[in-house]
Image (tube, rainbow, N blue to C red; front, side):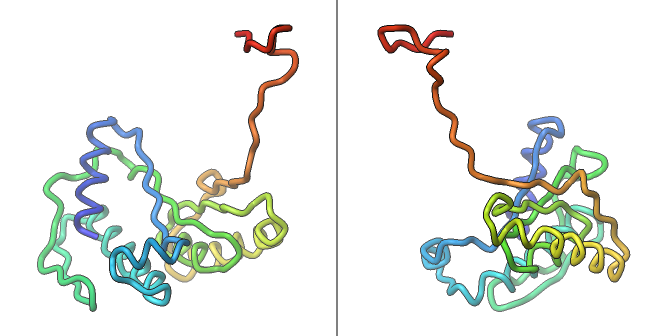
Length: 170
């Protein structure tokens, strides 16, 4: 988590605040395998890592944290974030309430990945309710403007944009 926080703050400075951080557990088992994790470990590590990252980004206080994967002792950032308030941060969700719980807990945005699928669309109301409940419990705020709905889009050439010989016209 320290490495991620350091790098995103550096990118925040390099882009003068035009950066967004998305954090998720990874949906492909092969991603976890490459770094020695099983699927059962990824969500708890996301929860732990996000908590550490939020502390590092939002306070000057040193952060000490230990779990099976990380051992941070009086960790702090070398640079404070450029963005004030903090740059956009989001966690993903498809159907389960894991992402909305984290978004509400930390007052960050949600990336509803399956918004145009039946299961994803059906979960949208539940996701918002979970975010609001968590925000109330943890005394944070959630903002619909930081909620992004994602769906598949196919962009293709149209007949109107092609010449008679099949060349694309500008």
